[in-house]
Length: 422
Image 1 (cartoon, rainbow, N blue to C red):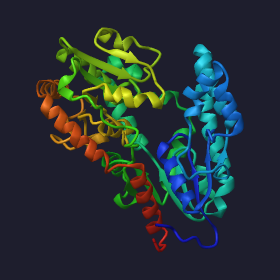
Image 2 (image 1 turned 120 degrees about the horizontal axis):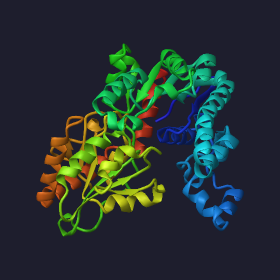
Image 3 (image 1 turned 45 degrees about the vertical axis):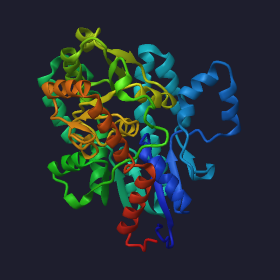
């Protein structure tokens, strides 16, 4: 399918970190419709990048960090306009080597990079028929664009999040330190989010939960468009070993180890569930202040953030994926786990569009420790059901590929612009 360009250049895409926009930009480039893709540094396999990869020590660090930022097929060097590159590199160095002061610098650069991306996007916007941009980097492009404006918002509306987080602080004070703290956010952030949401002709979200959060804040239903994201179902594939042959029943969580993901409820559930030959593995980073986790220190194995290349094997080593999240857009890790043949225990708050209760796993209410314990016990006691649900999950994941996402978004852009789709 395609959008027939007329007059102006076609689609400008501006992105900070959203992986789905990498795929959208690639699909548009393949159709000859991409005006420019503005984003931070991307590994484009240039000669200097190949040289860095071969350097002792530095090459390994690069491969684990910036080297992972490869783009989907379809994007060539002329399509990408990298912005804020030096800030991007300095931020990474500050995070890895700077200690406490470095993390403070990295936080400041995080906001500075977004402001720079927004400024660059604003300079390209006038010649675009369509602007598709992530939140916090689109306001200047939206102000100058005369064409259609589409905001990519991969989580619930910010005021919904603020209300929810305030409630969660009251319910789980011991994990409050792991929740987002809006008092530490620069004063310009919320007004810019409001401007982007107001100026956008349409807002793209990944789940019905995210759409409902916008509608709860007064946005009309027709403005909020749900298009689910995708997973690489070739890369993430099931283990060859039958589920009932494993000696240890392993529950897996992948993601930021914070309360927004429901981590306290997972830890409490596992503490009640655990027994001989069981294991809980948490993959991801947790906040510097880890005091919240002290009562559970002996209940889980922690693997810090790992390169994407290592994730498929980690999924394959597990028996069940547990993701009791409180606030999500559409979590890619749930799709990756399903593609890997794992039954999933999760909540309706984002992943509910993916997992069919009793078919691919179980959908439990948020904050429901009893339900998590019950489902873990059921899956441990019924390896044949675990295998069946994992097979169902794999088939379900095939409905959510990046190719389908690209096609769905391109169809949407075509219909929005009133063009003939072929």
